[in-house]
Amino acid sequence: MSFYNFAKTIANFCISAFYKIECTNLQNVPDRSFLMCCNHVSLADPIIAVMKLKRPFRFMAKAELFRNPLLKLLIQKLGAFPVDRGTGDMTPIYTSIDIIKSGGNLLIFPEGTRSKTGELLRPRSGAALIALKTGADILPVSIRFENKKKFRSKLYISYGKIIKNSDLGLVENNPRTLHSASKHIMEHIRILWEGNTIPQPENNL
Image (cartoon, rainbow, N blue to C red; front, top):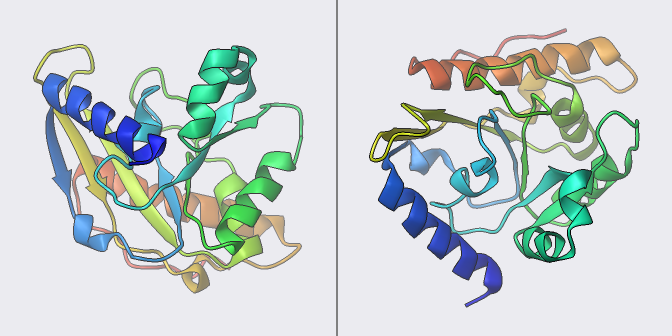
């Protein structure tokens, strides 16, 4: 067993022991390369989002976490690569593009940072840019805690229907379409988060 699968098994056990997990629509997860977009409410989200899935995922983590050698080794083994937020460094985007183009799976949090209240935040354009550059389809995912600190409270994980890349209305060298696509992706996450039905694709142009 790889370290990734071992760590995921341990995390699955620990998280399942603390929370009552309600995981829905696993049948929506495709058996191919795609871009998973999820809201961000806890430090454990990179594990929570994928712990029921078989394929390994890569994900971005803030650069500060890589300053501790032991923590750096651990999260790298789990598929993390650094992003230095607020610097304009495009390296994480290029890494993400390479992952998708090589047939891997990528988890990204469109909000760009963790919500301290649990409420959804305004999306940034990183996920839409990666989708534009790779042609990847999007799998929207919602994580919601009933009460993050309460033992045996519910943890909801919901997987939406794949958003086809062609439905995002992305156009090269057109920032407006990145903004519209980001809102479209976040709306799918929002409706999962609220427990309603998935919206129909819209023309974002």
